[in-house]
Image (tube, rainbow, N blue to C red):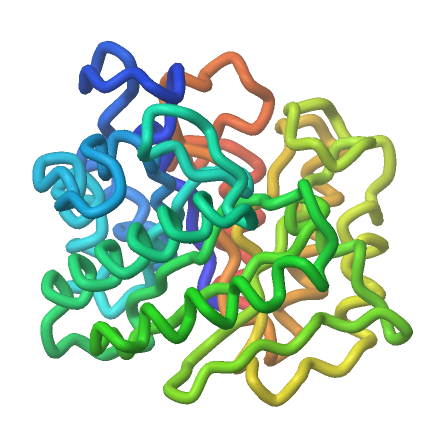
Length: 310
């Protein structure tokens, strides 16, 4: 299992603000390089959909803003790592200047146009790189509807992405903010249709009491293991090549660190789990308990590195 971080910042600030390093943080490439130097070769790079396509449906992506993401991603490609481009829209699209649910008629049209253009941009950037090194997420943390509602939309989006010629990984989210705990033997991950592949399911699992990612301390050293138990006991549909834990985290107190260690140890033992990216290295979130830097004296970083070498 690859382990790394979310390189946050491009999604920061008010949704419809657009001034780099004023309204939102632009992470430095050196930050990515510092994590890579530790052996943390996975990264997830969230972005704001409005900033990526400020002209709305039918217009080109903003080349400068897309360049922030690809510049952060390039060191991972060079290091034979793995990088996820994450549309951080929470089940909505904002490219029209308003927030629109992607399951509505207007929202779906905007969303499919967006994903087509994003896939084209990433395809052109990655060139002939190993398709297993690059992933596009379909959406961050949808929650407005049940999985049966999202399923046909994901199939439409996957088909549109593949029609661009993009052959990299697609990560598939499900409802309940992508909570790993929603799945079990009796409620397995829904299938999708991807005639090209690879396609993986992306889940989130925080270690705070309510799984919100607010940065509060864990109250149990087995909370992550418990929240993953049903998913790991279930069978993945054949359409998936594996599982990615796209967001997890907690502060550096002893219980939270023990919970992180127990969960990562459990995930490392399951060959279906391909990568984990911890939330979050973003200096604008320095007061959040989940804030993490490549500091080897941090016990959370020590746990990550220990699991890499296990």
